[in-house]
Amino acid sequence: MKLIIANRTYSSWSLRAWLAVKASGHPFEEQLVLLRQADTRASILRWSPSGKLPCLIDNELAIWDSLAIAEYLAEETPPLWPLDGASRAVARSISAEMHSGFQALRSQMPMNLRRNAPLKTLSPELVADIQRIETLWTECRQRFGDRDPYLFGAWSIADMMYAPVCLRFESYQVELGPVARDYLQHVLAHPHILEWRAAAEQETAVIPDYDV
Ligand SMILES: N[C@@H](CCC(=O)N[C@@H](CS)C(=O)NCC(=O)O)C(=O)O
Image (tube, rainbow, N blue to C red):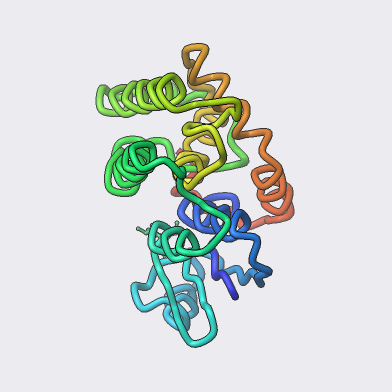
């Protein structure tokens, strides 16, 4: 398998798919396409028909879009979704909510692993997104969390979908209640997150749009 990703510093969608491939245990090759270069679009289109990354290549098959990649990998073992049906349904709901929503968070608080400063002001829409995420994490931990520290106990696609949000909340120094803060700290300590960040530190490209 080969996973085509964009800049590790900035590409939250690439991180989500990369976490799913790592959790699947499949050996894979990574190929990086830098965003905002003269040949970025052509380079992405060599692999991904949507013109967006990430894209997973499995032999002749291309699977694009982070959630589709996670679902493709979840069809095999080890399980990437919670085993219990009700937990799995809620895990899918919150993953879909992340994938299709939180526009203010995405546009006003882009992932930038080099950042370490709060925003000067938070719009009401951004505050609402942050509050919704905090509620969702707290409820999942309280309803479904077990001995393991993630949203549904064991590390799952739901955590992978929210991992870039944990990184944003850390970078932008967002204040959270104790349950959400504890969850975030466990995600940031996950070995796959540490590995991604270490690779991101080697990158030098700067994209001003992500430097809000
Ligand atoms: N819904 C897609 C979103 C993918 C996306 O927006 N990817 C960005 C990078 S994070 C991209 O490829 N942008 C192309 C460009 O900026 O040229 C997914 O979940 O994978």
